[in-house]
Length: 301
Image 1 (cartoon, helix red, strand yellow):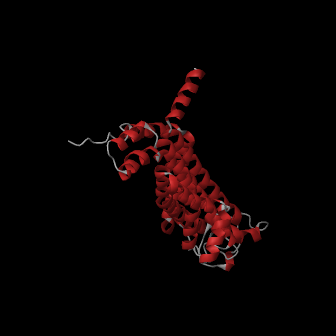
Image 2 (cartoon, rainbow, N blue to C red):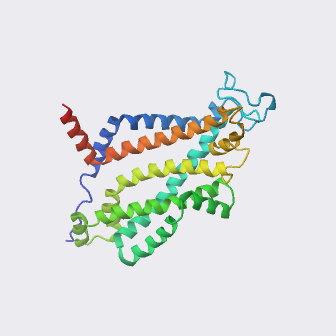
Image 3 (cartoon, rainbow, N blue to C red):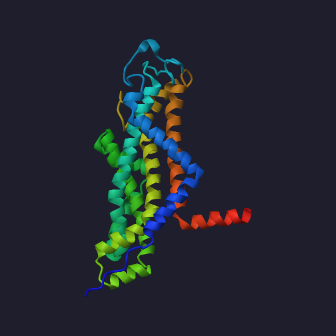
């Protein structure tokens, strides 16, 4: 009778339950989660929530300050800033989510393969990753978008290619530490194949740093999309975008500061919410953080 490999991580499900109980205790993370949910709902329901068409030009009300009729005022074309803010959020959040998905699909397998197999495979994959990491991320994204053409789909592709090597490098480092654990050695000795070891043993034990890194990628993608749109490489007019609206508003900072403050505040709130959420996930998924908080609470008593 063939021997079966030991269970991958018998405490994995229990660790997730403990993390789910720990997460609500992180107040900043809960605030970030609530804010992010509100931002996502407002963007998703923009056709229902927005009071005006975001691209409709009405020069008779241009550069109007915030009022009951226009909550955040109007821009130099008479377009409602609040409506453009909601629709611009759809663009930024969609780009962020797709970049996270692209980075996960490309970066995680590369990092796992590099960390587990080592040797020539590790050298080949990491030299490829290092080639991307030698360039400043935003400069590389600008170069790729300039090569492919200024379009939001090309922005997603460029940002995904920029963020995937960072995730791959992080996953590789975590995999190198986990692959020397006793349960991985035992599974290998009992005949488990590389695919089963990677999926059932390694991936489960590096999921925590992956989740935290993906929140960082999400926030970075939102900022990068706004930066590229600000420079004219992302969303093209008249389509709304937080970065594009900031670029148009810089000419009217003295006469209509609300045009610049609205998208800037939206980006700041969105990124802060994602970062708070990432901090909470990091602490909830790290048992050492639980022990540290319990020790501090005991000392204070």
